[in-house]
Length: 237
Image (cartoon, rainbow, N blue to C red; front, side, top):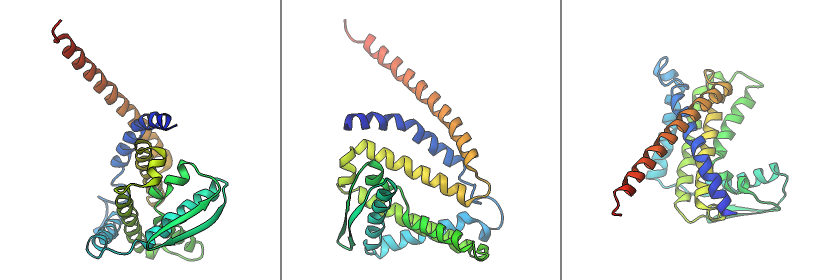
């Protein structure tokens, strides 16, 4: 099974590279280069992102909040997959959850789902049902950056350890899925937060970038194959 997952991971490298190019080309969509600085969403996201990094690097906060979100994400995805949660434990020293079923989405979901970021965005739009929340948009963008930085910093810190979640499905498959799904989440958040970005536009750009990556990949393969043939021909007969 791990051999099959390794093959799937290799096949996913091209779409991961293409999605990276797509997001890079849309990097200014949140207002990086438009309007007064204090009205640019990117600025507030960057401020929140940097603030958490300062907290994480200088103060070394407790991991309790991350462990709670980690185990809750496991539980939510288990329920979404039609499973049952029979036990839940999360604390400063670690967490554990008992579920009735398991697959790669349930196992790896905490590494690509920014739980608190989605919570902030969900509460913002939910509050917008009853009142005008536009005056609080800057605070929302700041919290998006803060919580997203929280998610990425702890995800990278945890992945540096020998995680059973990663070992269970193979390192190459797990890391490829985590990287690709994080990109996909960023693309969805970009479409949700920016009026200038749509899912249709992202999909069209992604398709074009897949073609670019395929051309680059085939050209690189042809070049490597030619160099290999030249090296073989130079070997003594």
